Image (cartoon, rainbow, N blue to C red; front, side, top):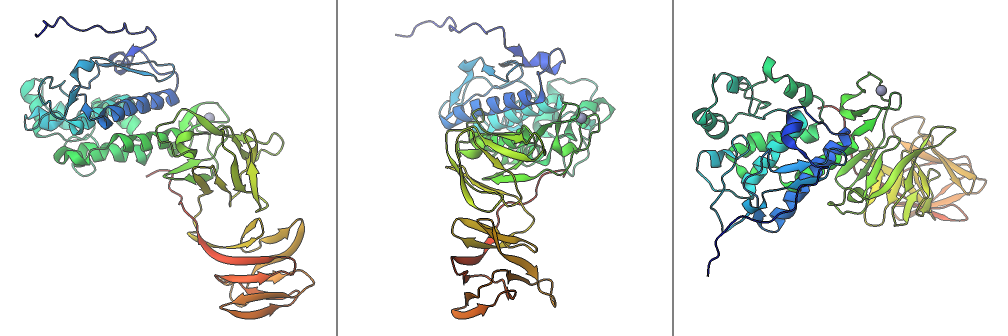
Length: 442
Ligand SMILES: [Zn+2]
């Protein structure tokens, strides 16, 4: 028996949620930029969940989701649009949001067409502009179905297409230009991927997981100016009041390079390999009251092991702090982090629980006793050597051959040398350092 359909029962939308249309019209705004990025993450994550279950939404547009502007929560409505891979009928979607192949009628809705709509929503959220509205769009006096077919279906040209200038921003597209240049490469690349490569090849469109990585990256690059308290993106190089920022160290964890500035937060997505958990704070950057040096505070449940500023393997319990230094390595339990460096490879000397980077000038100090120093060779500054500062002779093994290094003498640092320092044995090894300097403009 088939029952007649009268509609469906749904919860009333709580008053804390606002319409995305009101946001686009400038009637309302987010409490801050962090909340806007969080809203984007929540939206992407909701669709990622849906797609992972084999469903797709078909008709994502400005009218069917609502945002809490204070905390970034998202409420998606009209869930009767949702389809499965077998069901290719029903709602087609709203112009400007739907994928070109649906506009032209050459394909049915799918997760791939959803990905186009998600990118349109994200573009509008960040740039407050239509991704296909530029010079080409403005040449039409009226926009009707025929023009929409041309702009969004047959011939969609991204306003920031890297090589096709036909739809470049005009004086009518000031917002787009203003915001586009503020954002870092990690975000812009995903839009280009979707709106340039993804136009002809829907498989090239940015996936939910990829957006998540980009947005987590973007969020970590949102800093608060210590001079004026305003939010700004590090890619801008300075805050709106033109307060310059100094050098910021980066901590490399998995696919992220996290800028370490005062009050920066690390989440489970960084330290626990839990990509979907961008809400649980596991660490925060704190500052020494007297000397202003930065440290990482453990706010998670895991105990960390790390290489201290004295190059000793140490443990940091919940609530404890780890001083930031250029050779810092932290094992967060499920994920490891190390400082980014220009050097790809470096010699390290391991002795007991110590791990010393062998840089020129480096003092090797064990339990407060200086035993040696790294020097450049007088005749060739490119070659580094270790000087024996003890009063005992060291025995070291290089290529299976036993050699001696008398007090005040040096021996050349090479890969795989074991050294007997009298009380302990050390091992020199050339190790790769992961990560590279990648943040900033581009
Ligand atoms: Zn400032």
